[in-house]
Amino acid sequence: MNQHFSTGKVPWVIGHRGACGYAPENTLASIHKAADIGAQWVEFDVKLTADLQPVLFHDTSLRRTSNGKGKVSQYTLPELQQLDAGNWYSPDFLGERIPSLIQAIEVLEARGLGAMIELKPSPGQEVRTAEITLRCLQENWPESLPTPMLISFSEKSLWEVKEHSADFPLGLNFRKIPADWKRRLDRLGGNSLHCRHQYLTRARAEEIITTGTRLRCFTVNSARRARTLASWGVHGVFTNFPGRMPESI
Image (tube, rainbow, N blue to C red):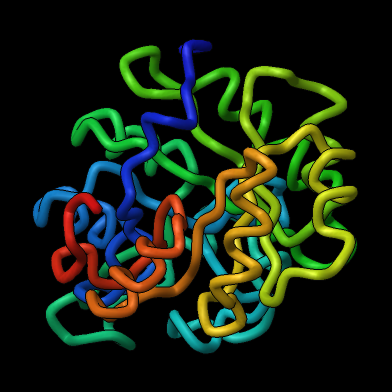
């Protein structure tokens, strides 16, 4: 495991769920597409299967981004990998599967991509999702890649990571940044704060950045908006279209 991570090495543009403006989200195709168009880092979501395997998937329900029904947590990994996770997006991706975290790591290594890994636990699985994802990363993350950042809306999940490993930098997600953000971030030992860009103001951005906190915004799909955020001092954006974003600002 590479322990020489520096938050300063995270690029300004991070592909959201791979590059989900071009390919079905949270699939190997989406990660490959991000690399194809020049992204250096991607973000994707991880949750657990019924047999406690970490897979890339955003929703609790299978319905939106696969041909399955019910919840991710009700199916084993082999059962989930029988589903189609691409045709909902486009017939060009018919047969795309729900990948395991290990499969995603193999693609990251092959393509030389860094990653922000969002812990996206199903209800009641906040601790277990963090525990199992952490173990998978400790056992499988290649030394050739920068250490991934673990991010989440779930402070319970991030707390579990903090309690069991000092190797991984942590990022806390909010839709709208609350007044007590710094206390909550400091408690976790994180130094990266992520928010929905529509709720951010210049004054709020400057207030956060002056504390030494890294501030990133999601989901930014307009180059004009990206430049505005950069002018406020924002450190990076998550985007569905990494090919449309200015490479560096």
